[in-house]
Length: 312
Image (cartoon, rainbow, N blue to C red; front, side):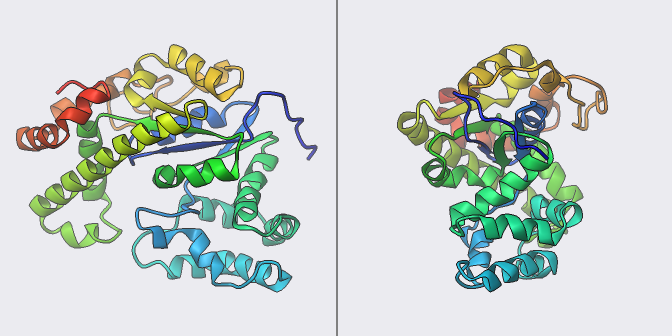
């Protein structure tokens, strides 16, 4: 496939980060529809909530990638299923499933062999193969946990842009509790599933910790990278998609396209499967949160809630 021509002012890469359940998937689907942008899904290349679960740390163990044999060993690690077996704490990140299902191993091997063999070069190769297959000029990825590694991302890609998705932590708690109750697979949720009260407490504390950390990161990143980092609130995106998209595209340096707004509702509300954005998703948590859980979140995050524009 012929490589798309780069355009002046466009970013070299776009990264979507944020606390899990904050609308990062919707943001990825929206940006991926742009004719110039190809965004891969979660890969946890740099790290997970636990840094040692980063894919790059597993890749280091195959040896010096300047040796072609080590590159082939890295490909074997992915395609043999060994990458998944080495992690006992979580399921395999979606990108690696996409890669093994859609891309012949000799094709990704060629991309890696043609890279500069650095951790950055290998990461770029994994992103580039997706964008090239879709005829997109701008590479990117969506890994919420990469919020902890924004400095590395922007050091590796000086002309890159970071979109930090933010959502009301009370809504995140409701969504995360439902997910962990219905799909208690990863550690420690599979052990807590038999004790709903403990599971709820664990999820609440996890959401409070992650959201407080996200606000702290925002304070630092917004000062350090005012032209390359931007927060987008989930509530603004679903309630005012046109205006939010226009502002976002101006930040990214691309022209907005109507196709980006052509989304299908995937939430569990009454509008599931319908076209457009589910504006009701912004406040639906109010009907599903227990008073005690709400009070705890508001007590623990009160000042930060106000700082980010969420009323208590």
